[in-house]
Length: 360
Image (cartoon, rainbow, N blue to C red):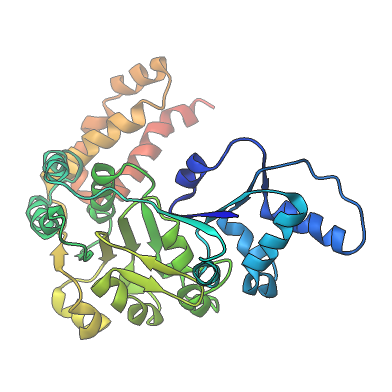
């Protein structure tokens, strides 16, 4: 019996599994339950059992405790020869190691893209055309991330990006992710975790947990948004992640080598950050970078960009009609009534829609 363990994102797991003569854990467990109850089943012959990460929570705890024994028993009955495991929990990993003399084991750890000098240079070139009015941030980001281009360095880089909302913090995270990977950014809105499930999410739950989300991430860029609004329980959970690039809970152990961890907040100064978060977490940031209020020039650049982005959603005739109304010029005259990019976009969308609403 051969077990193939894959640790990493779902889309990459699906690339290695066979496309034919397979079956899922859920289907097989259901069928075998029928057999043990004395019922006949009609299962098509298959060679490979595919176990997706979401299926572990669908079986009872005793099944996980004896996972390898159950699978080998099922294999005798159903005659499949290999098992593909997507992000198995720690209990199953330990069983595989304990049975290493009686099974064939292959472990595949997805290799996330590293930051290279070329990618860092690409980030530098793109920064000013995407993030406006924060020229000083570019230098701080590049200097902080440069050590990751050294292949002997594996420790994560942890940055706190602070300042008013809508001035480029989240867009900076998106840019770094685009340059490094281009896949879906790992983003957690920490202000959302204030309910009764917070403890389970941090320290381990079969279905919903931070560790499970991390092991299934598509990128090595992690955005912990609104870090200042997180439940205090979160901070102690991040110590080992920030220090060693490792996160462990009751069910999973995750390696986070070479990750770029970006925390955002609306604090006004490093002093306030230290007072609110405490020195223990404060000392673990590799850099604390201020995003300033947008200048008038920056706001005008954002308006030009947003105008072009929103205009393309209209039909050609409607675009020409809107251009003749000189909406862009009119908004430029009152640009300083807006504080950030979000306000500019919201107002522009309303203004562009207004002429057509009047025609209804």
